[in-house]
Amino acid sequence: MHIVYPAVVSALLFSIGVYGVLARRNTILVLMSVELMLNAVNLNLVAFDVWLRDRLHGGQVLTLFVIVIAAAEVGIGLAIVLAVYRTRRTVDLDSLTTLTDPPGYPTTEEADDPQGPTPTPQAARKPPPTDAPSQTGQAPPQRGGSEALTERDGGDAPNPGDPGEATIQGGADGTTIHGGGATGTRGASRSGRPTP
Amino acid sequence: MNEAVPSYLSPTGQEIVFLLLGAVAVGSALLVVTTKQLVHAALWLVVSFGALAGCYLVLTAEFVAWVQVLIYVGAVVALLLFGIMLTRAPIGRSPGLDSGNRVVAAIVAVATAAVLVTVVIDGFRTAYADLTPGRGTAGELGSSIFRNWVLPFEALSVLLLAALVGAIVLSRTDIRGR
Image (cartoon, rainbow over all chains, first blue to last red; front, side, top):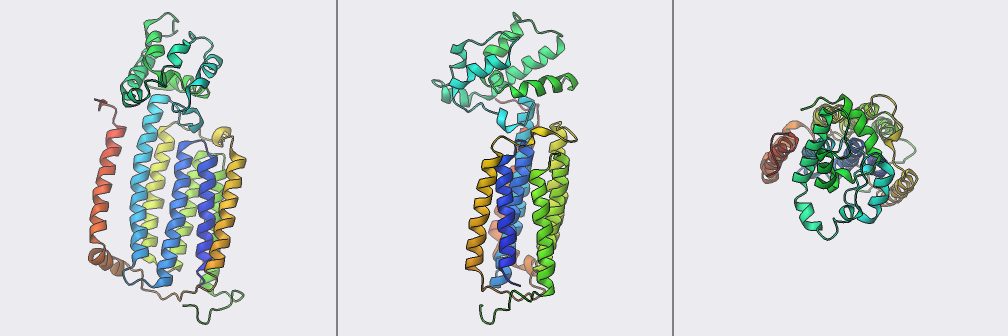
């Protein structure tokens, strides 16, 4: 068999995977595209192992190793995706913008959160000086924020002067400051979500 | 290895079968990255991986083919379907699966494909491999793994254990941050 055939097939699969990683918004679809790229590499490995007649079977053994690593990667990746979904109520990559530059935040917040109290610009602009501490201490405030969210689930109408609201606004920069495209899905899924 | 390369114009039966399977794999991979329905993307991924397993079979790598069927088609796609289910993805057509940079992504992907395909064709035009069955059986690969590749194998099993523990810790909700 001409080696060009498997090599071309794997090149095409790899570029399809590149397109999927760049163009998709759902995190699980991005994971699928990564799997496509890994499979392209596997096809190359097998084809060149057959061509070179490796006595150690290096290509095929490495293919098995890549398959195992891909399984581990999917497991970890899905666990991370589920953790993100638990805290953010979305797996949309375009709305996970916690790590973007802060100056864009106040405008998106005001545009997307009409009924809540508008966050103070000082609070929104806080992250850059305390960048490293807020990164390390990211988990506890977010967890506080999500607890506040579940408390709001119990009550029917959020009061703007509520202490729970204040907890949300002040407690987590990350929870309140993500893109507002998520707010729709948040509200929609929150109504049907069983309270833990 | 490049003595007496057969012509491209008279493909053997193996090459025809391989090209058909490769066309199925590439086509279903295209559907994976372009379909509007999440669950259909996972199911097209099954088709793509199955066709790739057929490609491995044609290339006489039978053990890799069965491992591909077992792990990719069986486990990985089931995991992805679980992920789709647990993130409450919309079943049915959902418009928001593609981001705004689709055009740029398509340009980058076409450029990648062009570069890779031209380089590969230019580099391996004269490469030809005789397919002799029996080189990829479980016995051959097993003795190779446990004679020559024992240390990577053991390291990989430790890595898999660590990954599983990490996945459990990440997905349990009753383990607090600190």
